[in-house]
Every structure is written in C-alpha cells, then in structure tokens.
Image 1 (cartoon, rainbow, N blue to C red):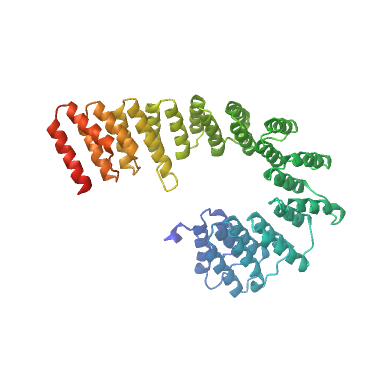
Image 2 (cartoon, one colour):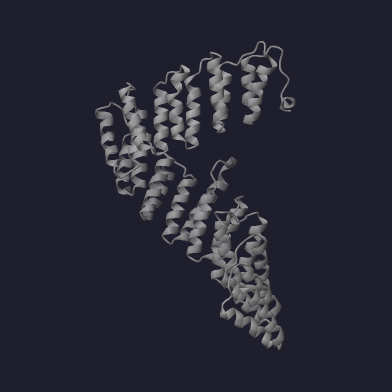
Length: 484
C-alpha cells in the first residue's frame, strides 16, 4: 500500500541516499516505511548504518513512538551496529519533553547494556531533565553520583544545580552560597544563564527586591541581560504590585535595544489588569500591535491567546464591556478562536448591563464557531445559557428565551429549576399557558419537582383565560406524572 508512494530505488542503494529520503519525509510513519523498505528491497546486500538507525530512532522518539525506537535499538545491537551516545540522548530528551523523567533515567542506565559508555554530556542532559521535571530529590542524588563517578564540575552542571536550588524557598539561599563559590573556589565565571537563573528564582518566590541589584551586578560583569531576564523581572515586579518599576524596566530594555516579546507584554498586561488598570493594559496591547504592524516581514510576535484572555478578564472584571467587545473582535480578526471561557466572560458582561439579546447572539456565534461543551467546560455553558434565559425573560423577551432554551436541549446543556420557573412565569404573563405547561412537563422530565409557586403560576395562567376545567385537568395530569 505505502510502497507505491515511495520514490524509485536506485540500483546501488547506500545509507546516504536512505538518510536523505528519511530527512525529506515529514511524516514519521512514512519515514519508517522508507527505512523498512530499504532493507526489504535489498535484502541480500543493503544494511543500515548508525546514521540511518539514529535518525529514524530520533524521529520515532520525538513522535512518542518509544516502543518502536527501542526495538530498533535492539536491532542495532543484534546487527553489531555501533550505537552513538546521541542516539540515546535523543530518546532521553524525548522522554523529558513527554514529562517522563523516570523513563529517561532508565534509558540512561541502559546505555551500558548496549555497549555505549555515557560521557559527561549524557550525565548533564539527564541532570537537566530531572531538574526541569521537578524531580529534585532524585536530581540532587544524581548530582552526587556524578561527583562520585568522577564527572568533573563545569559551568553547565553548576548552572543546572542552581536551577534546582532556586525552585524552593528552603533551598534558594543554598543557591546563592553555590553562586558565591563558583568563581572563588570552582574557577568558573558566572554567565548570563547563571544570573538569569538566580533572578528567575527570586522573582518567582516573591523576592524581587533582591533581583534588581543582581541584574545590576550582571550588567557590571559584562553579562548582557536577555529578553528573558527582563521579562522575568517585569513578571516579578508585577506579581508584587510594583507596576511603576515594571514599566520602567520595559522602557529600559527598549533603550538597551532588547525587543520585548509576547511574554514581556503579557506579564505587564496581567499586572495592570490585576491592579484594576485595564485601560492602561489596553494601551500596552495597542503598543504591541503597533510595533508588529511596523515590523517588516512579520518578524515581531503578535499577541497570543494568553494575552487576549488576560486583558479580557481584566476589562470584564472592571465592567468595561465596550472595550472588552473591541478586544474580542480584534482577537478574532487576528485569527484566534475564542474558547468557552472567553465567551462566558463576554456573555456575563453583557448580561450585567441588561444586554441579554446581545448575549443570546454571542451564544449563537459560539455554536456556529464550533465551541461545544465538554467535561471541562460543561458548567461554563450551563451558567451562561441559564443567565441569558433568565435575563431575556426578565425583559419579557420570552420567545428569544425559548429559542435559547431549545438550543440547550439539543446540545445537552442542563437548564436549572430557577430558569424553568422564570420561563413559566414569563409565558403565563403573556398568556401562552400551553407553552408554560410544556415547560412544566419538561421540568419534571429533567428531574426537578416544581414548587408551590410554579403550580400557582400555571393554574393562575389557565384561570385568567377562564379555562378552569383545562387547568384542573392539566394540574391533575402533572400530579399523576410526578407522583404515580
């Protein structure tokens, strides 16, 4: 089946040619097909070398096809093909990206079984994976094992150790003790990564006042701060509510020729919104958009989903629905698809200003855009639909409320008893007692027991139309339906 899609094989196939074909194929499974077909086509002569094996193993690991990758490792061993250290590292790093640090560690320990002796490069890679995945006790144990096995200290290993120590209030002071020893005792000059790691730890742990002098020291040591360093500082000052310093840092990085990225701007927007300054946050977004428009070739980053979500949350919290709608439209214009949470913020904001019809229209738009309830968003859908239904009834737009209600039934969205009660009352006031009676029946079908006020409302509705007999029969039928 797949062989028809393969290019014609040359008469004298060699590993270099297979390597080029595998690299050119973007689909990992098709690349594996090329790999397998090469030996099938030339079963009497062609053999893969360590380069073709390593490439396909790396591709499989990156696609989380770990069982297939291991089977090829075993095959390499059986065919006496030397296995490079980087082949194992590609599997370990793939496990790290898949948040499976223990599997990465098992792979590392299996290297000797495949006649591959791990070097300092492998040790450092595993150490970094353990730290990045917050397996800190295991990482510290691994670090001491490295020392026992004679793996020499390096700037890289010390930087990874600092990253581990900076993750907790209990250990960050130890990080600074190691930092002070780096040059005096260990003979390594701290670099931008060293300072950035310490600054990141201080900012995340709320000790941002200690981070600023560290950045000044960093600059004095000719270690240029990066966009990540500045973004971390801005995030830290926003977190503690010092927005003025955060804004000054933004100006400073621009003056120093460091272009803010989406993380920088989003951190600042988040801080401003949490401080009730969402209009200033809008100005930051406009600055970001303005710079992006001026950039040639689309090199500047555009606001992402997090940026828009953060700003919309701030605007809706401050009841700035007009501005929120503008940002919402801008977000869609730039190609971002709102999720249920963002629609919920907009619909709720509109309902706060009695703009229930617009809220209903956004519910329709949400359906048309393909945003459906799931296990995570079911409650959000229920809350906004019920809010709109009750709001429309309160403004006597019962027909539109009924349309929204019918949509909930087709999409499996639960209508609460209070919404049923309000709809029933609304239709009775309009004299549409038959639709009200239908709602009572469906209310019971959904497992809600109508209270006395609902029964009084429906009976009064029939009574006012001078259809007492129908009212009595309707009431009798409902009682039998509920209690028999």
